[in-house]
Image (tube, rainbow, N blue to C red; front, side):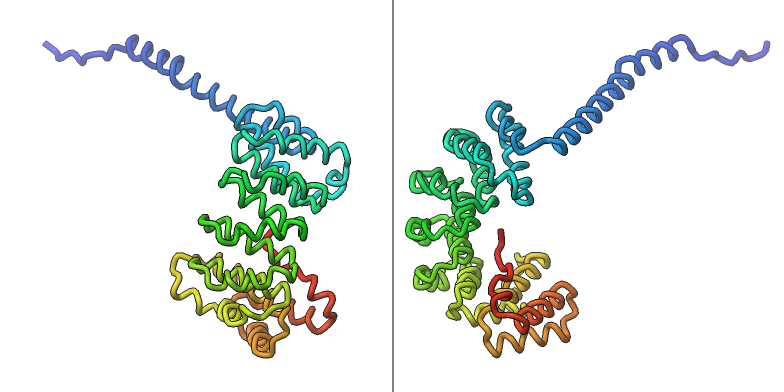
Length: 301
């Protein structure tokens, strides 16, 4: 009698495949398609959105939509001059900022940054009005905005934050003073050269140089050389290079023979292309026009 080869139960396998495709594969593909379409639509919508669209989303959008729109607005205003001078837009921005007092902190922070990036002095009073009673998390963004607006009017109130327990608030105050460049803050900034936080000491030296004071000269020289960072392994290469570039731009403002010589050395011999180019650029500006190099951008904002 010949052996019979068992025949697999094909109908059961076919049913399993149908069920698997119906309840797993097809729903997954549909969901993936919807996600793709939504993402594409969102991208196109954001690309076509106007500053007024973002303002409207901040007013009536959901929680996530509001802070994302505030963030997008801060980017748009960084490169757009025309809308930042529009009276209606300015009034709406100020009103929304006032109403954001109890909103998600990110909404208020990005709105403050957006206001600062316009360079329009009409935003100074709204930013200053309640800064002393502001949520601690929002203060750094407001201080940064006032620095970007170069508000001499803000100096006295900002001095109160140089001794704040929050190091980020102290840091943003020091940076803001460098952007404002009011000689009245020199003595206050000198104290920050001895702050417990290294980055605050470094930025105090940079800010003093931007005002024309060389009290932080030794710090700037060490930053330019780059050897400073051996003792700070937590500072990565990108941050180290950025700090050196900023120090070079600030150091040239002092017109100090030793600093100038070090910058010349970097321009001639430095292997890092970005550092070398920065050194060459500031030396070129320094020798061409004193007014031009005094306006050279050494800010962080």
